[in-house]
Image (cartoon, rainbow over all chains, first blue to last red; front, side, top):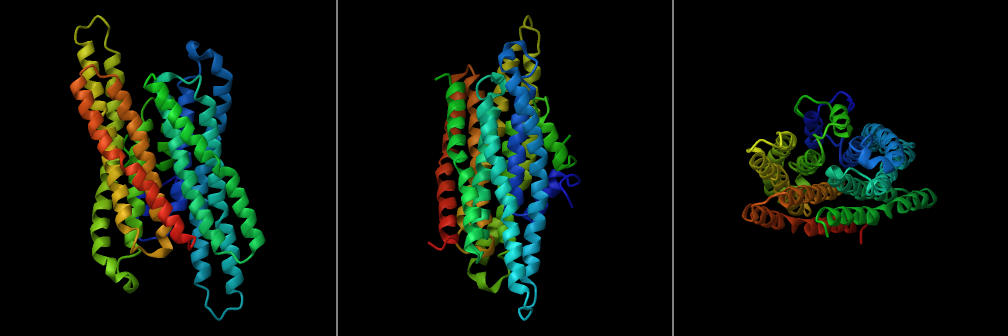
Length: 206
Length: 206
């Protein structure tokens, strides 16, 4: 069942259940969607207000991209659930089957893709939050920090999930390529911390 | 509309919309629910497995509490939405109304309560994650870290929302009491970082 039809309560119940999927990977993808939605809300509450006319162009651009990421991240939550289920199924292939090992490796490499894509989108949400830190409606500036915090958690969570899959890979070339891709996105953790600190400082008037 | 009836997609769309609520406060509450659900999943996938018999009692206790928190945090998301809407409505009282200032102060003090309760539950999710770090099914150990990361983001986000409301309060006594309550929960941020580091270290075999 996809998140288009599951209620929030049902999704959380599924997450908490003994079913292995949805798990941390899908949760991370929804953390990105949450961050993207908050960025989008801030732009929506800034656009069209004369006081913030100077940032209108940036807000328009950021709103469009955040809305796309919100949708893409939701799709990733579903993709992660499917990829994780495929790994579980590969491990269920009988041990005497000559194709078992290859099937596990292929499923594992494929299962690293959704968390990697989650990390990439999370890093982009952090960048979008950074772009609207100045010029956002001050009444919802706190939501920029919440967006960055949510995306930061998604990054951290996605990284752990990529690392697990990379650790289970026998092909060092594939593993290294995935690790390098991941490292490129992880610099956004420090950026998120900076955004959160800047917002708190601005809100406390210091 | 509550989260019992809204789909995940509809909730995210509402979050991203120009409606001021749901906003960062409700999002933070759902980050707690996500963390609690992941803790619950880990206990569900550990309980009853002979290999983890030694941790059975702890897992049972943690599961029961995590399930309660999952429900309570969802209710808090709805409560935050309602409290925030009440503040917006208080500000709409005509300026010439002698009761306006008092209504705003009362609504603002009340609006600090859901984020404070969110911070309290988030700190408890971190503590639960800490309790199951050892003794959890290693196949889902990563989800303990994702739970801690999600709760950490909730703590950070709730703190910002409490601080904003505290900053708008004229009664220093009420403001100080809220700030002190908050500070008590915020020590869990460092605990979450420790849990995440411990899980990553365990998973990388170092």
